[in-house]
Image (cartoon, rainbow, N blue to C red; front, side, top):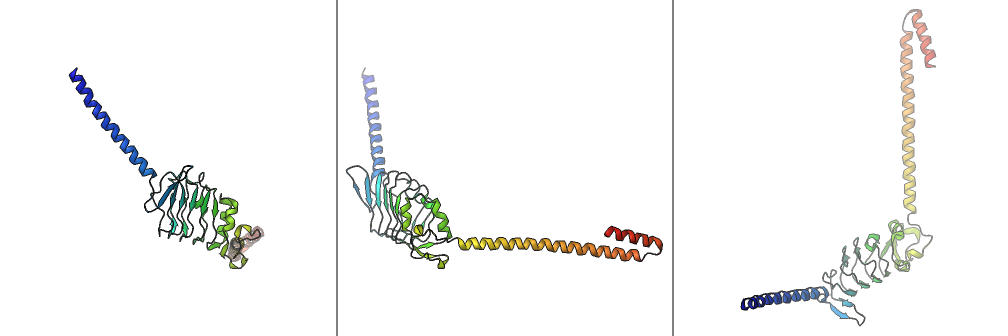
Length: 264
């Protein structure tokens, strides 16, 4: 009995230590997943969900350590120049994202990947966005603020519009600061509301001209080949006739008449 009691005591101590270590590891992982991003300020709402405020911190890139349970992120008034792919893919609960008043000039493909079903509002106003890449907004159906950006409206933007799933009224924030071609009257106009604006007309005309030039080139080649073929055969027939004429006697004459009839 003393041996059994000692054995049970030793194993009980070991099990207690293991359980204690497991609890500590769980706590550490939970803290790592839900702690606040470095230098940012976090608050918990009464209804649940974390708000992370990183405003006006002179950040040059999107923080990599945003908590997984974040619902709202404010990154406004910073110096962020681009949003890389999958920048927010680890935030499945994110409903609001503010990136306004930055230096954003590029949104990489898949920049907002993973937010299609959760994000309700996206603020990209007052940045330096010029072009609109639909692949950056893949699957995103949020309401977006796209105002106060130096948008360049051209055929690529026009062709991208049907592939964008954002709330339709969000696209009224795309006001053309420059356009291509520049004489289409697009500058200063909300692109979505300019129903009769066709910035692909020059490309269509260029394509039509290219097709006409190509067809004319093929036609010229065919005509040239036919002319060459006729001339070549005519020259061969003439040489053959001259040869027959040079032959003596009736045989030459009969062959000549036969050749002439054959050529005719």
